[in-house]
Image 1 (cartoon, rainbow, N blue to C red):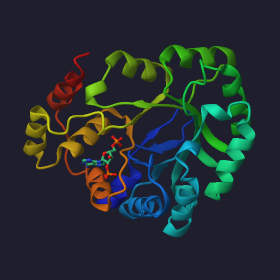
Image 2 (image 1 turned 180 degrees about the vertical axis):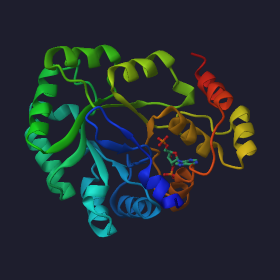
Image 3 (image 1 turned 45 degrees about the horizontal axis):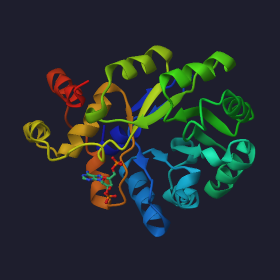
Image 4 (image 1 turned 90 degrees about the horizontal axis):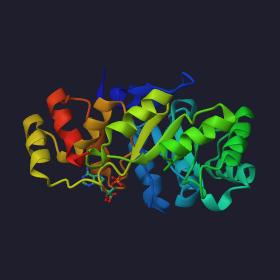
Length: 263
Ligand code: A2P
């Protein structure tokens, strides 16, 4: 398989059976032309997961790049998110996202932050919009396990995904296992920003594989089956962050990286 096919084809199965790519492009703070170009570059390289949010103000740019990419819509997994300020207006917000993106549906729609608690009522309305076909999958972001259990208790439905800040520096075995036990896919944001990329232990592992520290961090997510969405608007770093399919970390290297958090 070519590197592009590996980037595009490496995925995890969500509880529904749908597939989600393991590597995606984060777009927080990417605006205007630079957002359009970053998404275009990512799609060209083979990224098939693009993460946006109403709050990012770049859904139109993401939609434009997807439309111009020549990659079929069906083959691209786009996530967007409901801001806390829009709770109670879920339908209008999702319709506005779809309008901006130029899509009939989003692949994944997340509650961006717990809106002052788990808010099972918001979750119920999201499930309704999913049932109507506006979002293929629904999930949450920045939720604790306790909050996830709370929305499940009232609806009988776990979120497909919980997107939280995650990296070796934040690794927490209990949180990791709790997601797996519930069939909730863990998706990590800020995989690089939360790390000291100059850490000597990280540099040693990177050197052993002839790769960069950032690539080690992203490969570590892959080894754990955690979706990673590094953000970059720089064409070279977008490519660097995806060039993680030509090496593997040993289990002792994964263990060592797990230990970075001291948890
Ligand atoms: P840039 O957009 O200029 O590439 P995170 O996704 O962890 O929040 O990290 C995003 C930050 O890390 C951005 O500032 C981004 O800057 C930078 N970044 C992205 N890829 C890399 C990389 N491979 N090495 C170093 N910094 C990176």
